[in-house]
Image (spheres, rainbow, N blue to C red):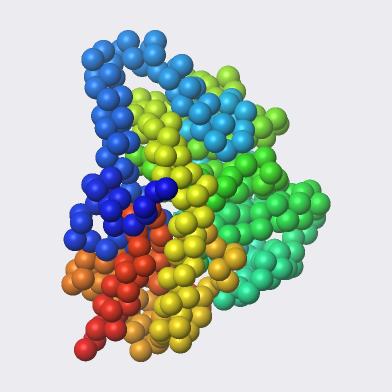
Amino acid sequence: MISYGASLRSLWPLDPTVTYLNHGGYGATPHEVLAVQTDWRQRIEKNPTRFMTAEYPAAIRHAAGVLAGYVGAAPDDVVFIDNATSGCNAVLRSLDFRPGDEILIANLAYGAIIKAARYVADRTGATLMIAELPLPVSHEDDVVAAFAARLSDRTRLVVLDHIFSPTGLVVPVRRLSDAAHAVGARVLIDGAHVPGNLALNVIETGADWYVGNCHKWLFAPRACGFLWATGAAREAIHPLAISHGYGQGMTAEFDWTGTRDPSTFLSVPAGIAFHDRLGGPALMTRNTGLASEAARRLVSLWNTEVAAPPGMCAAMAAIRLPLEYASTAADAVALRTWLSEHHKIEVALSFQGDAAWVRIAAQAYNEPTDYDTLAGAIAAYGR
Ligand SMILES: Cc1ncc(COP(=O)(O)O)c(C=O)c1O
């Protein structure tokens, strides 16, 4: 039986004096996985030419195969990318859009990906449509209804966040994929926060393309993400950097996008093994429970509300902050900075609708008192 909480902190290089409640932001890589990455780097440096020409092709395919097994995919349907941003861009920028076509994305989607979709729409004459979700969201039907209201026979691509970043809301992606396909649209799922946070089978999501990060919740070193596609969808996409593999299929194109440090990708099996040793599914259940219980306590303390009910979240939850602490976006930034600088608390704070929302995350090294520390610091703010 694993004893989660502060006793596990030494497995990470995290500063022990910091209250780290933002695992979702950039991930945090355990010592053990960093050591595996160092081993890969040393192996590469012994003979870079030999490694890149003779060893790399099989090594990258092996790592992709392990990851594919973890996400329920065939080995050659998974390729590595630097991060979710580049994976979503690769799909968006590979597809042909024409004036009159529509790309649909939610108002609560990750801002950078909304911008990428806007860029593609601007360059092709397509129209960017926004599904307007309410905040808070009280039921998954609200999410489905918001997308359904904007779907039409002009919709060519629906971009679905599997977990919305600032709210932690888990989106009913299968229902939405089916609805999109019913009108003839294709589906890109942005699962930046999913691997290691929520059980994932990419095929069951119904996506045409699935993008995920391994550096957030799967304990891989930064920068490390993946892109999944199968059948015709594989042939439709290209990496942002076209290189030697052009025209030879998805794996050849994405496995070599120019010289880079592949040690992050090659360390993914170590990240998965670490996750498994910390409990795998049990870790995810524990983290989800911790986040939801902490959210419940903060809501009752602040007398506010959560952005989404506990049953719709994984290891992150967003709680509305009383207006007395932050009534503008600038206030929210000021509070986040103050928490970091004066209390060594790292937590995500966003301003959405007309309120600031505190997004907490729960990882193996967190425990309930971490969120009490946050509550205590915020109570002292401005005094
Ligand atoms: C839904 C979503 N997409 C994309 C990203 C960007 O991830 P990255 O910076 O690793 O590309 C994030 C980051 O939190 C996210 O939540």
